Image 1 (cartoon, rainbow, N blue to C red):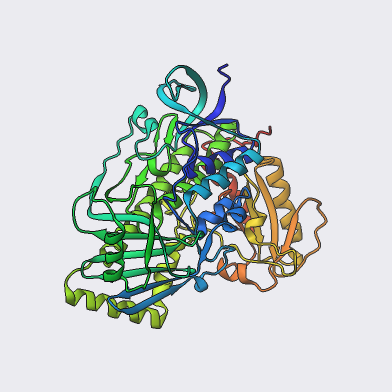
Image 2: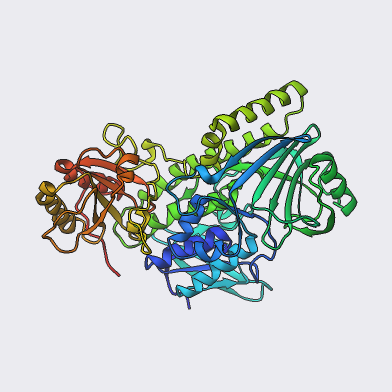
Length: 542
């Protein structure tokens, strides 16, 4: 039966599963198919950033995943036999997940698929996309069973390709994706050895190349190292032991090697970013849209954030609240994020593989100075956690530099009340809705606050939720306005909210703009631009 759905998701890796969980949480009909008959059994991508964990927290998947991983709060840098630098996640502020989580991709997919099942969804496995027929108002996809014995047509409003670097959706929709082979050859394996596990990552710089060791929850270690030679060289126990001894001096005695997902052999990686993320009714996300080097954990984390950015926009379009032009901002914003991730991954690899002795000595000295001064934490931790990525104002519909200097930034997830029922700012955000965060207000501002709440209810019913977050409790006569107290003033300080103002926060927790109380109705034009319309809109309900 070819029953139409709003969205067809192709690919049930971390990106596709995140998108599915986000969409089902917002009441959007979808199907998610994957040509594999089961989720991955390999460890593959093991690092989940603080920002990605915030995204997974939206629909209840972060906490069970954290319980299965290793919280890495530090990273150490060693050059030769000398430790040169250290960075610490202790500097992370206003985030409920101040660490990098090390957990096998197999566990990530298992947790996400289990959560999708709890929410009422299911993955259709053994179904491979073999054709797309894109029409004016829909896409007809043809999926074949794993044995090719039968085919089924699926009609969807939109198709999202989360189907990896060899994406069928990307190919059928004609989106260019030029990649190039990285100059380095890598060995990426999991190692069981005679050494206690740790809660830190270790980077080793050596004239012959670099090595990274990260702990895994089963007591093994991920080893990623640049090596000499061509792709395909088998990594024997003796070869890996010799590399450990020469590069790291870690004292690990290798007992067993496990395929991390790329074979127990040297590999070449290809890097690149698709020139477009959308072609008509087809969109791509995750590895289908970008491919980075193995350092920095950018790939899977970028895919999870692709899904977060796309989900709320697709939901509004599918519900008829927003026009299709809203999806163009997905491409603009996530292309920007991909460019930053590529720069981070490339820079880390180049820094780690410097060969001239003088330059290595200079690098080590600067890293050591950065540790002493705290500059290294300030520079690297926001990038590794991906909490600092902001979208440029020009990519944000309805935003302007004059009134939205902070537009595009992630709103800090500050704890705003103590005790056993701690509430954080991100807890105030409603799935699929904008939040009008009213800050810096006093009792005398109540009439204006209630006027604003009535205005949003009348003109954008169900789309904007007003929340008062003042420095002290005020008495509101209008029912239905949520109120919390920023007793320490941390949120106000972080957002420079010295005067009464309304901060419009997007469903993904990013700031869309700011206005004074008197100018809050100007958000009508902002929302009209975000939603791709100049006419008043009311959110449709399901």
